[in-house]
Length: 109
Image (cartoon, rainbow, N blue to C red; front, side, top):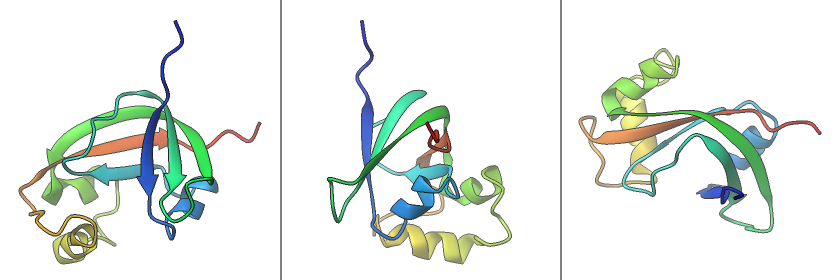
């Protein structure tokens, strides 16, 4: 039986980073749980644009630990991380449990 492809919306400014393979993780809060396997990202501004990736790992942890976990602590100190995440989730706190979804770049085939 074929596994149904999971899907997530992504904001327009981040979509090209997924397509080019420069973005290989996403942090989600209070959204549907993603599991390892196929995932289709679609552009929130233009849902006809989408890209499929392979999710390799999903980890739940406090937002305050997420930047270190994905190796971006230098560029995402707590204040920057919180400001960026509140753009999408106004109520989020550093103590909020988030899901870090890590994925392989889209295949070139």
